[in-house]
Image 1 (spheres, rainbow, N blue to C red):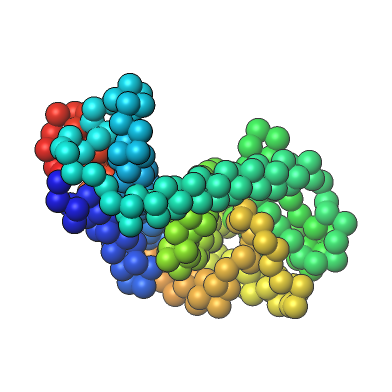
Image 2 (tube, rainbow, N blue to C red; image 1 turned 45 degrees about the vertical axis):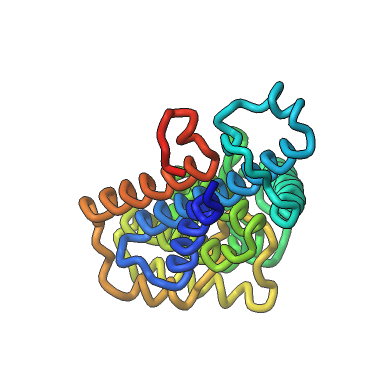
Length: 295
């Protein structure tokens, strides 16, 4: 087998993810968030697939009888060249570490959502201005006593429109993909930060359309951020009203509204999704299952 080809799919998706971590996308925040979430998810899958693939083939050299009995043919290299321990041992260790991190993140995420759901629809007894979108059947919008004191009726509508956008578009799924990618691949933390910012901007634009006043939305975001002052953001992965990039969000709202990208957005998302999806499939050696010969 040719070793560089085995690692090529994961390497290509990682390069694309790193590029998107620093290069701004000239798209509406809704399409930026979709592209970033797809790249984050497929990169995590591609890297995990490569680790599993190399680890399994190394394990097969240690126990060939068990491999012949339990592993499908497409999961093996199909030649007589064994995986060296210098690659196989790290691959097995990183596979176990990735699985442990993914399970830990999933358990913590579920616990935080359940905790938030118990308070959804009620007023949090805190003087810190808080607004939080809580996903799920028992979810809703969680607000604090401090937020109700700071804002008037029109401004509160902005907050609820913003949080409703998070719920309507199921932004928690995007956040889960980004958090999983960043948790298992630290190099993707910046990409995850950009994804979170894009989701906030997406909800800002929805709120601005709903209330018909971009300046009001900008003013509300700034006012809540100032009121929170040093009582700054919680560690929750759920999107909060002033969670990230307040200054940039205000500046964007005071500028002209972004283009909807009704053609460019879907075309770019489809292209990126297809390309990274094929790379992720190749990393899992699904090409062999479908009778292809990519690797």
